[in-house]
Length: 95
Image (cartoon, rainbow, N blue to C red; front, side, top):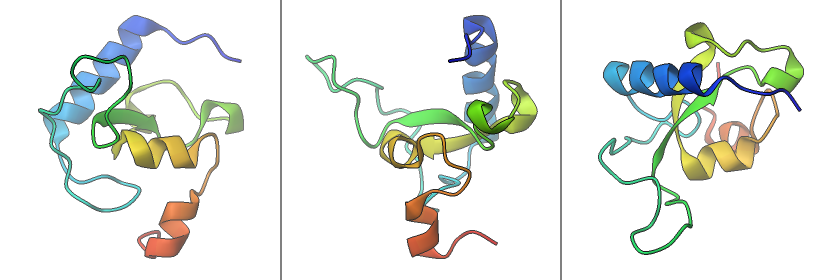
């Protein structure tokens, strides 16, 4: 597993948040104000925003701003380290 730079991860999140937009995996709108964790738990909120690596690091993608896109936690979780996520295939949103 590749060790990630947390300062770069913070920059990626802020960069993607400023750009806004819909989830690049499912196409649905993202509420950027939803907290990452469900209140009172340490369980991630499925609708929360994450900065996804468009091309996974395990597949040769870079850990930088050019490879960061907005996604829901649930969509990113389903994608894992795949180049194309099953949710994209079903939705037909991939060109």
